[in-house]
Image 1: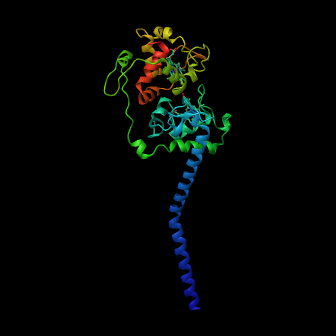
Image 2: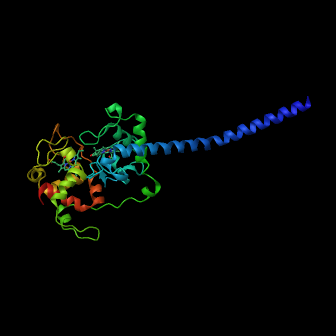
Image 3: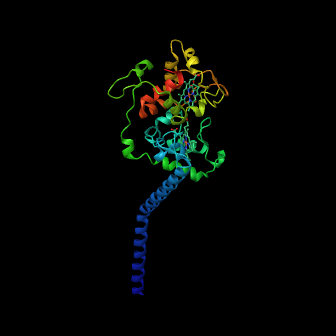
Length: 288
Ligand code: HEC
Ligand code: HEC
């Protein structure tokens, strides 16, 4: 009898120790599991990215190097996703520019799911007529969000300080940037591909090809009439840097809406790539 009680007690205590140990390890095990799952999500997302998004958003999502389906180097139609302004901090600048109220996760998932109407960014979620299930949208969003690592986000990229007057930009000669005369051919390429202006404004030689913003084929004349005291070049320059400064009257589907449907992020983007791009765009659009 005594022996049975002793054995029973020891067995009970052993069971408790084993259970207790397992309980103690549980959070660690769960965390490990979560990491493994996150890792898989990002990996799946990376594959989805390469197959579906890299033609526009480019190698490593930098929108610098894009290849078409045949493997030929083409211009990038998309914007950088591997971008400080999209993924770093709680309220990255792109959310602010888009006046989005919510988290960056929501912003990125929603943009992927619904696309951007009026631009070439397609809707991807089945709910919006796209090919992806919700978990695939989440996976590719996780891939994008994964660019926000501590190293990448620790230094804010330097911002080019755009002068107020376009005339000052055209003759700028500082340590940071020396202006050279604009190249309209490169301007055309920037307009159509690098910055995707044509996805909203249409092609310059085809009136009516614009889908969201005004057609810009006659902006060299019209631009000079928009704001008292501004030349066409100054007006176009100011419109790119701050679309809300003046809202154009007529958009393809009625009056242009305020705030502007045009992103306020072009200034940072062009400044980060090369301020010369602005000069090339201007020479292409207004000839100076
Ligand atoms: C046909 C070209 C194209 C393809 C393919 C494409 N995108 Fe885009 N995407 C764009 C363009 C252009 C924009 C910018 C739209 C604008 O002007 O607001 C954009 C914007 C975005 C944005 C918002 C970025 C920001 O800074 O606001 C995200 C996120 C995004 N795309 C993710 C994706 C993902 C993920 C895929 C693949 C599943 C994808 N895109 C495929 C063209 C494309
Ligand atoms: C997402 C669509 C979109 C993209 C991309 C876009 N814009 Fe716009 N843009 C608009 C809309 C909408 C307006 C009209 C509202 C306003 O005045 O801001 C506009 C207005 C303008 C105007 C003033 C037009 C006028 O008739 O007064 C200029 C100039 C302009 N954009 C240049 C550009 C350039 C250059 C790019 C590329 C670097 C670009 N936009 C990219 C949508 C876009």
